Image (cartoon, rainbow, N blue to C red):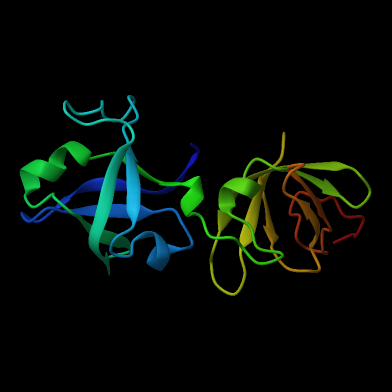
Length: 187
């Protein structure tokens, strides 16, 4: 089965089994609703898998609420700080079968991050490194060899075609978007 990251447990919160979670999904209310099953993975580099835990460790969301830019999550069967302490640094993932289908023109971040970006001319621009959500529209961060990252807004004028299976994006650079672009204007 394939799994997709939705957050990371930072640390326990309080004494009654809640944990602080840094969220990495657009679908917070869906992923952290009561009854949802999330899976904990324990990356060796951060924190070895605790004794008695399997990987992936299924965790049933009992309740969740926003708190200081994160989510406070209580998992069923974890009622004390000592029980959730081993979950520190665990990555929370959702099973692929629990992902909802998206409308035309909508994408999951993991489908886009790593995709190659080309200009209309066919020139390779770079690779989608991350997706920011500052407000009205998403902004795709394009990593370019030998240049600064390019911030490309996800708007119709810029994003001409997204081929998810082919991991390819065709984009148009609007004037002023590329700070590294050389101009012929004299100052």
